[in-house]
Amino acid sequence: MPFRDDFYWGCATSAHQIEGAAFEDGKGLSVWDRFSHTPGKILEDHTADVACDHYHRMEEDVRLMGELGMQAYRFSVCWPRILPEGTGKINRRGLDFYSRLIDALLECGIRPIITLHHWDYPQALADKGGWLNPDSPRWFADFAALCAGSFGDRARDFITINEPQCLIALGYGNGAHAPGLRLPCSFTVPMSHNVLLAHGLAVQALRANAKGCLVGYAPTGNACIPATETDEDIEAARKAYFSTPDGDLWAFTSAWWSDPVVLGRYPADGLEHFVQYLPARWQDDLPAIAQKLDFYCQNIYNGTLVRKADSEAGYEIVRKPAGTPQTAMGWYVMPQALYWGPKFLYERYRLPFVISENGMADTDTVCLDGKVHDPSRIDYMHRYLAAYRRAAESGVDARGYLAWSFMDNFEWSDGYSRRFGLVYVDYRTQQRIPKDSALWYRDVIAHNGANL
Image 1 (tube, rainbow, N blue to C red):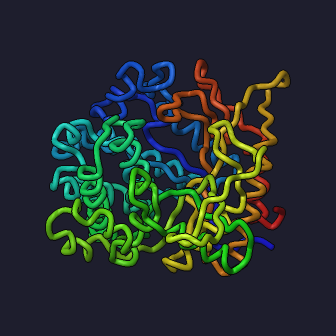
Image 2 (image 1 turned 60 degrees about the vertical axis):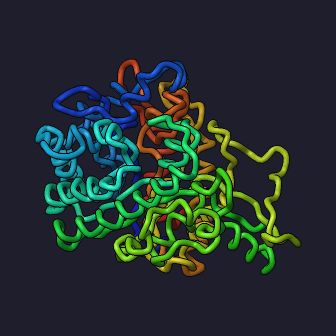
């Protein structure tokens, strides 16, 4: 069976990973510009100074999306490209780039989906304390208002923040991502609250400045998968998915980041562990955080097997069978994640659901015939999409799927060593080569998933 008639298929990217032009046309410095130029932070000291040169090749890339049948394109706007200092003076050349991108997408019949923040935070604001500064939610809301007023006449769909879990846990917890800080919970928990409040104020700003817009949110996290489809293991997996454990892993959880946004409250177990770190009068911010959303996104790549246990938690993590397939990132291939993840999230939050990222890194090469053959990615996508369709058939209000990523790109601290794209990028020549998976995906889109 196909997906619903209005289901949309597309792909996703982020500004810092593809645009390049890091120091051109008035763009300000981002924390990732600073971080990647710090020796030893990125594999082989790669930078995104050029990346995929999308800033100069945007029209070519959009035409290729159209040729590959994409119905939607999720992209992020680079905050310091538009506001070089994070606030204040506007860089009109930055606004013009995204305006031209939106126009090009619409000309090709592709739905623009704008992510306001995909980690390239303005360095000027980081120097003022970043997400720890109590003014940080208002800084982001003002940026959202500018984007809504500039693009909302043509782009209808907006996503506030991408993967707040990684934003805080990797950027400020273990230091693996920009700005590379290693801070205790007494810092990262109040930062998380400011990120959540920034989301809520941004939703208000979007609705005030782009009438009729559709607004979503894009957290992430490994889906919890029951080890067996018994009632006991299913309930154990559900409980594990929405638990907020004490310790370093708290920031990777789902409920801490989504319960306040959708349900208007922090999870009880999270408060038990971390309430002492929240800002004074944090309860007063909950109504602003819990703004009505039009759709709920989740980035899902991986899964964790869970079964019932006679323990205080009531569940335990099950070791994956030896030989379980892995991607080039070392992430396990767990197609069931796209069934149980959407199912559990939809049951809890009851919002129209979109997979905003899903895909796999592989060791792709150009073969002797000049093509890029990636059967592992086709198999991966086929299995995951079949699981997602099962979720839709079981009652999840599935509205869309956005493959990560449109093209190979700068993979954060792994530099250019990982290839997630449907389109191969030769970083020396900037040639684009659609992989076999891109052609396969085009056929899936044409059949609305009925051929899976």
